[in-house]
Amino acid sequence: MSENNETSSTSLVELRASRNVIRSLRFRFVSVVVSYLLAIAVIVSAMFFGYQSQIHLRLDERTREIEVAYETVISTLAAAPELFYSQIAVDETVTRLMQEANNAPDNELARLNRELFAYLERDYNTLQRQDFRQLHFHLRDNRSFVRFHRPDTFGDDLTDARPTVRLTNTSLVPTYAFEEGRIYNGFRYVFPMFHQGDHVGSVEVSMNYRAIVSRIRLSRPAAFDFVMDRHVVEDMVFEDELDNYEISCFSDRFLRETEFQAPDTGEILGVDFGCLLEDVHRSRSLVTRLESFSAATMPFSVNGTAMAISALPIRNISGEAVAYIFGYTRFEESSILRGLFGFIGLSMVLLTTAASYLYFRIAEAHKRLVKLSVSLHQTIQEKDRFFAIVSHDLRGPVGSLASLASMLREDLQGIHGVPANVNEIAEVVAEGAANSSQLLNDLLDWARSQRGDIICKPEHHDLSEIVNQQFAIVRHSAHEKSITLENDASGTSVYADDYMLRTIIRNLVSNAIKFTPEGGAVSIAASDGPAGTILSVTDTGVGMTEQQQRDVLDLTVKSSTKGTRAESGTGLGLKVCQEFTRKHGGTISIGSEPGIGTTFDVFFPCDKPLR
Image (tube, rainbow, N blue to C red):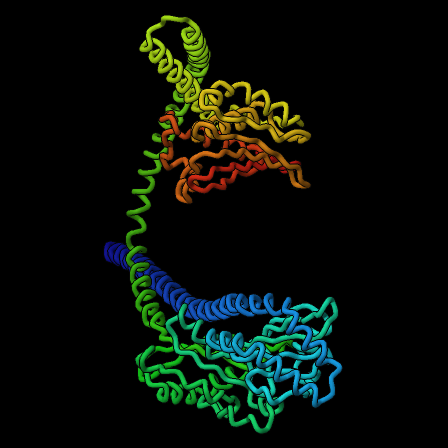
């Protein structure tokens, strides 16, 4: 009985243990499944919101694109009216007729109207060929003087109807803005007019929106439409001119000018304009939003094709939205983004599975990276020691060799009877030694600068004195090529490090001599300003192309070329100049034309923190 009780007790314990194990395994399994499902849910949610965010971002980009395109076109088109204005503003005949018209009776005003029309009719035709619709002169009391598109309609007061005219005649400064008109609407460029210093009125050159939209279309493959607020047109336009407008097929709220035909969406988008409008009309929320005059791009579908409509409200000079430019485009990004985010979601699930494996691989890579970092640090230290040895043991001997070679060349030239080939050898040796010394100095300066061994300690210097000292160093090279050295920096002070300043001037002058042919000139000028000092080194040398100007200060580009006497170089001297200028917090720029010469402008700031 006792044994049975013990067996029963053992079985009960084992049963309870088995149940606990099962519960534990079940809990762990459920935890893993729930965690995985939560991770998937988080990924799916993130993908959904990411997709929506990207859709809105693409739509906002399209809105901004059409805004930028519109602003660019308006700014570009201003050149023609400004040129026309600059010509007639000084035309005595035009300004005199306007002066006389200000005080003329009605019958005399008609004669002056016809006379000005005949005088400028050819110019008006030229503007029309450039897609400008209106040329309109106004008197200083805002009365219409000559409408070239309706020459028989004049004398009406524009004070209340045309704020741009009123503002220009009041402020006497040009006004650029969209504005409604008595006949047509358009973007208007209005300029004040003067006769012998007296204000006589204003002149307006207007661009119609058919031409503006056609130019926007050049930068965007879209179908565009331009419509006006119906109430604005009916309140402003002459009654006998209302037949210039028709109800827009988009909405009864808007009118389209009869000469502005509906866009050919079939050719541009592959979708019939009528079908497109039907789908727009089906979305009352879309129509309601468009009627609110807000800049936006909204997606919709036409027979399963993803489309987008960009609405750009046009505001008059008072800031009131009175018109719209609509841009219809395909919106392939929608399906592309769906596929992209689906692929990204699947990829994230797979990446989650591979995370552990990658973690261990990254840990191993980190260990190797630490070893490589230690090795790299040791290599850098060895490089620094190498440059220190080179700087200490080679700079002096190479400099002395260059000086001795130069002296030898000059002494041999003064001795009669020395064979010509000996002088030639001395010349080659002297030039090679000088180039080697200069290269070594540039290389060591560059290396020291990169290591931070050269500390910028700016002080105030008399720039003219330092220029004279550097001219003395290169005077022999200039004399050999009959190059004139000119110091135009007198009376100028510069706040700079003495060593760096001298190095910059010496390298720029040496470089200028190198690329200046015989009989040329190298000059240094300087100018003080509230922000700092500009040092300009100018030569009459061979000059540089735009590509050479970009390459010459780029360390990654080998830009060295031979001088006018085939002088060799590495181009490193200019990099040293650039680095030393940067340490002052300044800038170095180049202006050059091939065959004319080159100017290097080095700017040294007054109070900018030094690096």
